[in-house]
Length: 112
Length: 117
Image 1 (cartoon, rainbow over the protein chains, first blue to last red):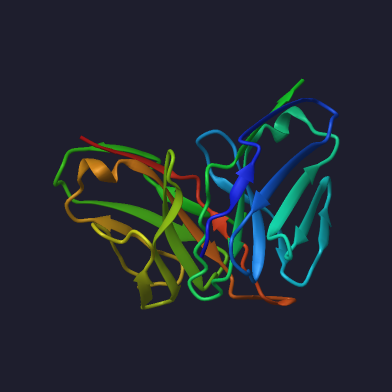
Image 2 (tube, rainbow over the protein chains, first blue to last red):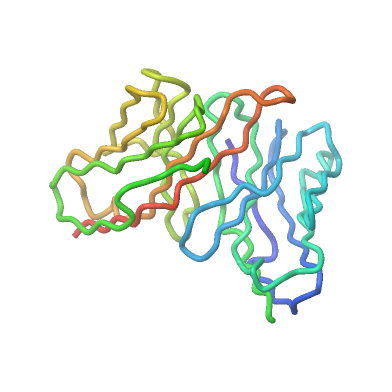
């Protein structure tokens, strides 16, 4: 597996605004997943996009994938205070052991 | 409720005292994995199991053991803990197949914060 690099490292917005965070990776992938982690707690799977997909939606989440640029973005629309968390991308070529490798993530703060 | 449980949630122990962190899932998942999360190093896989009696090393297996005698349980064993194993540990599980073919989403437990002094 490979580690994705999230950008920005930190993001602070007001409730109701949209939040966009980006992920870059180095080698070809089979799929890319996004996870959320509330401070010091468990990780929650948000969305998975496969390498042959360009865009995917789930509720207020929209993920795009550009394999030519080796990048992905996660958009959270109409953010809420409860969206405050760290967000990690996990690009994966590994369909065997399914290792997820997270970087430092994007710390999102949504101000009420 | 579908979930992955870990116990204990918090543990402070001393160097060399054997300990086991339990992990159990009720989703009948074939795949289970252990990770550790450290500041500046991100999340790293320790061991994984693709099914009962099938386990293999991840990226940082040194100092750890696992077993998979039953599908639902995947305990992590530290035979002789050392301070560099102080970390936040996560167990995760995943189903191999879903409606659309192979699935890769992993479901995580709440984490075990281990301190070794």
